[in-house]
Structures are given as C-alpha cells and as structure tokens.
Amino acid sequence: MSGSSSRPTAAPVPSKDYARQYRALAPELMPAIERVLLGDEPVLGAELSAFEGDFAAYLGRRHGVGVGTGTDALVLALRALGVGPGRAVLTAANTFVATVHAIRQVGARPVLVDPDPRSMLLDAAGAAAALDALDPAQASTAVLLPVHLYGRVCEPELAEFARARGLARIDDVAQAHGARDRDGVHAGSGADLACYSFHPSKNLGAFGDGGAIVTDQSELDGRLRVLRNLGKDGKYDVPEVAPNSKLDTLQAAILRVKLPHLDAWVERRREHAAIYDEGLRGVGDLELPGAGAGRHAYHLYVVRTERRDALRAHLSQCGVKASLHYPIPPHLQPAHVDLGYGAGSLPVAEQLAQTVLSLPVSHELEAREIERVVDAVREFFRG
Ligand SMILES: *Cc1c(COP(=O)(O)O)cnc(C)c1O
Image 1 (cartoon, rainbow, N blue to C red):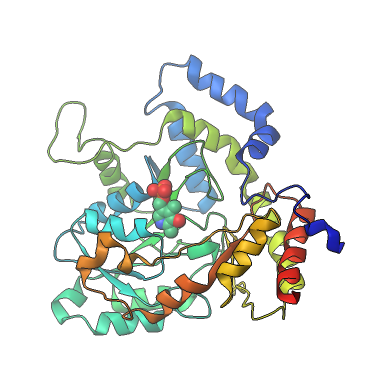
Image 2 (cartoon, rainbow, N blue to C red; image 1 turned 135 degrees about the vertical axis):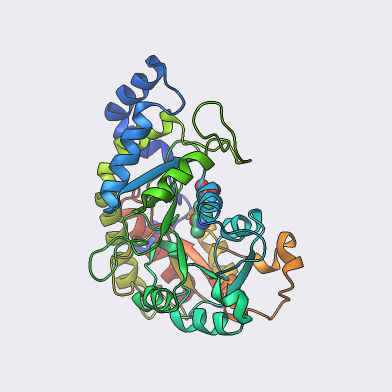
C-alpha cells in the first residue's frame, strides 16, 4: 500500500465488472448457453426446473420457483399469501424502492418502520412498536416483510417476534444470497416465502433480469406456478388475472453454472470487507457497517460519514467508483408521497440516506484494488 497507488493515473476500481465475471466462467458458461440455444424449450425448459431444484436445495428449502424479476418475486409472494387491499405489510423504511412498489402493486398498505441505527436493519423492537400502533383488525392480518439489506441477516429476535405474534412472513433476500444466521442457516429460512433477485449486480446474478421464490409449503409452490404464468391452471383454463413472469430458461442455465461458485464469491466479499474493517477502523468520522452475528454476505459494504458527498467526489477523482444505496428513502419518493409519510417522519432512514456510501466490494475485485480504495479513503481524511 504505497501512497502513490491512489493517484488518478492508477487503474480505476469499478464497483462491479461483468466482463471479468464472464471471462472467468466462459469455459463453463458457453456450453450451457449453447445447450439452451440448440434446444427447443426457451420458455419453461428443463434447465429452469433443474435450476429451481438446485437453488432450493442450496438454501435447504423444498421448492423453488423462477420468476421474471426480484420485484415480481415479491409481488407474486404477496399474492400467493392472499395479501391485497386493506392488508398492512410491515417493512424497513430504508429498503430499495422495489420492496415498497411490490406491496403497493398488490394494493396492500406499506407500514414503513425506521431501522435500527446500528445494524441499519428492521429489528424486533421497531416491528413490535409499528404493529402495536395499528388498529387491532389491521394488526391481526398484518404481514412482516423483513429485508436482509446489504447482505446482512436480520436479527433472530425478529423471527421470534413474527412467530410469537403469528404473522405471515415474506423475506426480501434480494441482497443476501449466501448470507447465514448465527446457526449457519440461510437468511430467510424461517419465512413462509423468501424472495430473491438475480439482477446482474446481485451476489448471484443472471445476464439480465431474473428472480425466484423459495418455500417449504407445496400449496404455495403450486400457487406461484399459476401466478407466474397468466393465472393459467393447466393449458387452457384461466381462472384469474396474473402476470406473465417466468425466469427464462437461458438465464436459468447461466445461473446453474454460477450457483456452485456462490459460496466462494461470498467468501471473497468477506475478505474484502475484512480489509476495509482493518484499514478504515478509526479513520475520520467513518462508521463501519459491522457484521452482525451471522455470516454477512456483503452484497454492499456500506460506511457512513457526515462528509459523504465530499468523500465520494474524492474517490471519483482517484478512479474509485463508490455508490449510494440509497440517497432518497422510498417514503420521500414522488411515487410514494401519497402514503402520507412526510419529511422527518422516519428520521433514521432519512439520516442514513444522507450519510451512507457503498465502497466497492464485488467478488470480481482483487485485494489490491480494495487496498487502493483504503488508501484513497485514508488520504481524504488526512487531507
Ligand atoms: C434488487 C432488489 C429488489 C428488486 O429486484 P429486481 O430483480 O431488480 O426487480 C428488491 N429488493 C431489494 C432489497 C433489492 O436489492
């Protein structure tokens, strides 16, 4: 780690690099892609069923259903549980806007809960307070929708709370493929339905959009297969209106090649995080993310600082791409102002929006690139 390594002339450090990922896997990917191109099942093909089985088995669940996007996974999960107009769905106020979109797409009411300021996640205390503030009729049918944001597993007390209060639970695991709790169990395992995204930027990504839902309940598995396919029950019977949202066979074939690499990729992300933990401890006013009790999957390595925008500009000058997740919380987006949460109503989420900064942590990056980021951050706070 020499001081000169953060000069703008050094090679840039991207936040992700799809071409690198492809090159590393090309010898495995190309035959799988060709198999689909030469086959006659581009939709609902054998590679899709095979991937659904592989993914469910990896997660220790009984069923997996591939769908078009992570957002659709949430929408279809809500519908499979019969969640619609009038139902309250408790979720984290600092989540990606897609979580809130999904709740509204089925006509339900998002109840946004300020996260715990240390973990940045929805916790049992926040969820309990939000549930108790609902009128009893709403509370008795409420659904809990925790988000394992940034790749960190929500605290086990949240699962205990859902169980104790008899809440149905849908987990948004779009950022936490490969994350495990303190008992080594995958994030989202206790949920009725756990929803994943395979957007290319996620820990396990397709080369396009994709998503999946896993469950142990065979009735829900059956419902999801109808709901992702225009509401068709069999070939010609269509008892209800539903989207057409299936994971493409081609994307499933690609994901099947990638899945066996996921644990090693998460390990690589954790090594990067350890370099940051070590190199950035006590630097300036930086608050480091912390790992929690389980196996954090570090989809994102999110630091906080009051000087976020200046630090980001400095990093950009050094060729380092740092991103924001997210600069505007869902309740302050024009799409959701009608929910009636004004500015100041969710102070933790609003404070996070102003201070969070995601440092590059992707598994395609090399340790020396992470060290270059450490140098550039330290240089900023020295300067
Ligand atoms: C990416 C993401 C989604 C949506 O996934 P898409 O596949 O992009 O639709 C939902 N929730 C969270 C937390 C995400 O990060």
